[in-house]
Image (cartoon, rainbow, N blue to C red; front, side, top):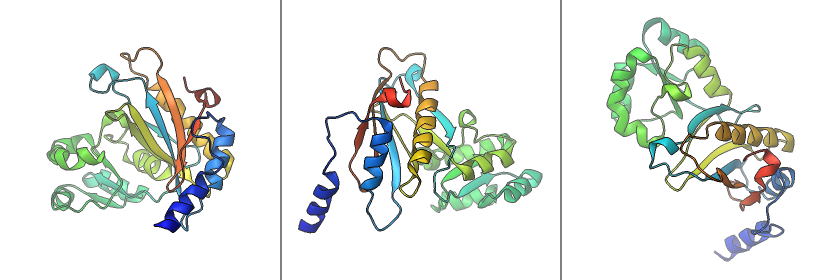
Length: 232
């Protein structure tokens, strides 16, 4: 326990918890402190001035990060016939209909993103209690209920990130890896923040983006001045 405490204390050195850093400096601080033996994920968290308990203040969307996420995203597609073949050709990891339904109902969810053609949504709807809490339920608003399964699969594999505000008004997502160069991370963070700002709901009043911070998997959080990423 002493060694862990010392390690945490060391990586926190040089980070002022009360200061708002510019995006470039914040990324540099986070990268320097991502010293784990694995390639840590860089995550951004945004505290928004919304109350998602009200329907007109829900924030949800999807963004294609320009430099990808650095993750190997496993994609499942509910489709039949030609669309199933199309999904497989596009690189989907799991494709099926009733057979895939049974697999998921059995508790095996070996995928990170779920796509469905519109005609199979009545079938997929039965999995709402299983997929919903995990954020995997296909939704036309984020492009995961579509007839264009090729584009959806490629987007998912290439860096598409879904976001949805949580009860406390916080949105967070992985936007890359510590191994990414600083410029790539900055571009991804700006793209993510821009998408969240564009998704501002009609019911949001006052200051929309309250706080922004980034961190690595095992590193400290670094607060960012929203003005340096054009998030307002």
